[in-house]
Image (cartoon, rainbow, N blue to C red; front, side, top):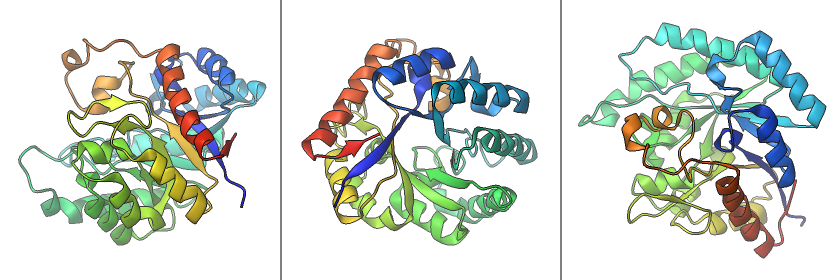
Length: 291
């Protein structure tokens, strides 16, 4: 059985400029981008007209979009959901132009000291609504597990995908985020694997939650990739999300104060290269080809 995967990356951790992103990705042989930040904007701020120009840039260099790394669902339940839906519709139009088959979403920030399970019905109702809005589009919504949102644990991720119960709603698996939520990533993978359509490559140490290159933390990335490619014959995306330094929008992304990340070294092409090399080392050790 041939083992091969597709590599993609959150290229805004290299630079916000698309040309620079593509230049660096070309040096690593990566031709897919999970687009989150581009040309100084979050993907949610990109207009349809700008998306047309971005597509021209991508086509000229032979790049494709693996997924839109959107911030959909990264609001509190008390926030303006109607405005959020309007942003989501624009993102769907951008996704159509960029020919993205996937869009990463979340399941809403939970207030501190609350029981997440008390809000399950509200979260599920909203995700069903988003899935219905997306249904005319040829796109799959990928819920990402992350700390501070409803779907932070594997049990709640499973509840979401079973209760939303839509063909265009699947899971993206992020091992580092499960580590940061105190879970064993391989155990969570075993529970969720039938519902996962896409994988993020991000590792973290359980001792201090610090993100590290793949294989240096407790994300069990090598073990998961081995099972994926041997037992499940997976040939889809492994999308690098290094988080090895600060970058534009990082504080908002992590729902923390700007001052909490100011002391971090800046993310750049060098740190991105460390992340790529770590993943490629794992793939080489298992004789897994990549494109």
